[in-house]
Amino acid sequence: MAEKVIIMKDVCKDFKVLNRHEGLKGSFKDLFSRDYKIVSAVSHISLSIEKGEIVGYLGPNGAGKSTTIKMMTGVLEPSSGEIMVDGTIPYKNRTRNAEKIGVVFGQRSQLWWSLPLIESLKLLKDIYMIPDQNYKDMLDLYRSLVDIEDLLHKPVRQMSLGQRTLSDILAAFLHNPKIVYLDEPTIGLDVSMKSKIRTLIHALNQEKGTTIILTTHDMGDVDALCRRIVIIDHGKMLYDNDIEHLKKFFGSYRTLKLRLAGDMKKHKEKIEAELPMCSVGMTEDEEWITILVDEEKRKVMDVLGQIQNSYAVRDMQLEEISTEEVIRKIYEGAAVSNAEEESSGHGEGGGKE
Image 1 (tube, rainbow, N blue to C red):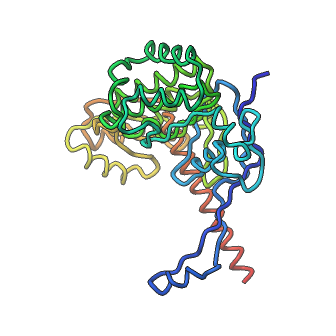
Image 2 (image 1 turned 45 degrees about the vertical axis):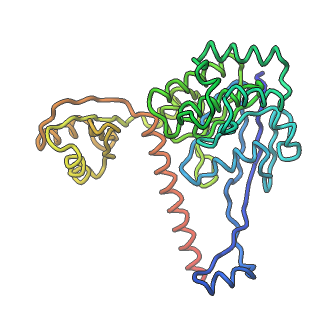
């Protein structure tokens, strides 16, 4: 039986938020106000993660991802429920928990700004009391995975964003933690550096068996690294399984990619109006128009025929639904569901009044 390193049972986190008033008079009133409301950031999340897993923890902005990570790291105490991280309750024993984890939070570096990377690594060696041989072995491993010689003697303030992120990841794994939390590790990076960092994360996971919790909006990270994903929205868990299982729910969807003669942006706007039942977008390089088609509602060949009647098609591709599109459809479904719940709630309230 696989070892479970993170166990969450029915975890909730509520925040007490002041109902603020407008204007100068309102601001003064707020100083003495006791008019508070309770906001639920995380609601009844139950989850277990095994040793060595890379789990994508996904959700739209404000879904509760960061709050969950802060509870796992011991920064926040849950309002109710239980959390165990490698046998430790994080918020009750933060020091012991900190010894077992590594963290990388997007563009906020944990390295000393004015010092060369090697000096930061030496300081971390002393902080975590890493034995000399273990420290040497980790540096040798890093050298075998990425070219770090030029970075070791470069002050952090002189590094590019990609170099700094890569250095932060090396620092997070230095003390051989059981778990590493990566919060948007590739945000703002170019394609080449993203690829290098994904390769590094995967190699460290394979070499050390480190459990990795990855929060990201970049579906390239998810496809490259995660076999399992957990999706939350409005603090509630929507999905917990592997990516392929997720795609089976959307088996009738196909993505039609088209390159048309003329102004692609104008064509995209017109096609959106002409195909209200489809999701129309563009690739990042703006070279292709993408049309997500649900074949249970309309056949993709019918859509293509309609396009060909109105536009000169230079090239086309037909693809299975991508992970990014699956996640977006789930977000959209959750948003509709939440809106319906709220509408239903208002309706009931109106009846009672």
